[in-house]
Image (tube, rainbow, N blue to C red; front, side, top):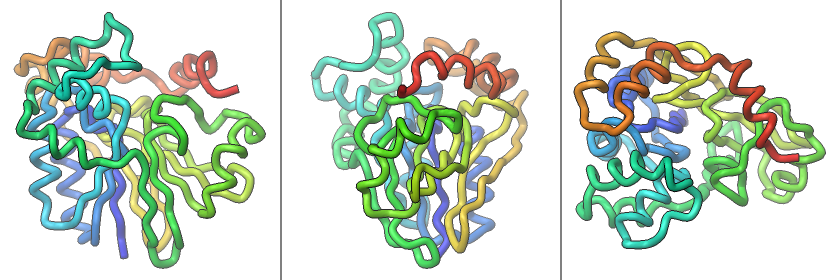
Length: 248
């Protein structure tokens, strides 16, 4: 069984369309999305594209999805600072109440049995939280308490938008990277499970994607197109930033 794993789409429909084209060619049995379908420039279109697939799709909450659901449910957003709430609110309102029940069904974590890999645990950030930061450089002794008690040999996550494949004690931890906002090379990053673990990269027409994104009414459309599609931050720069806020 082959399972495609996408994460951190962030409303980038052109990137998602390119990845889904690859997924169809590879004839996967199912798909898992490790959160953060939104916020982003085309959140409704991205969600509808995922829901229209002809293979089973299981989506877990990322912090962006969770906060959008809170807004749609009339609740206070708890992890988004006030200056950054505009894009989340805009994205939530593009989905509207029609999709609130859909978001409400998404779990925080997921465990699947995948032949050749055994039980695989999926989460957005860490098994206990959807906003904690860790990278391939985070010391193993900091992470071992979070992963050793899960009873699995493989954990797949996202959140930091940088792919990695590392060991934490006896647990292999793989970050699927980001489809819509990868840090490093300008492309879409994702993951294939089965029979092994394969970090994948999909190229697409960045200039055309940037034009489509700028044409939306997303509050940060221009910045998104320039800073996350055409010229994303380097992996080295982001690892340096994450080092200041990562688990210690």
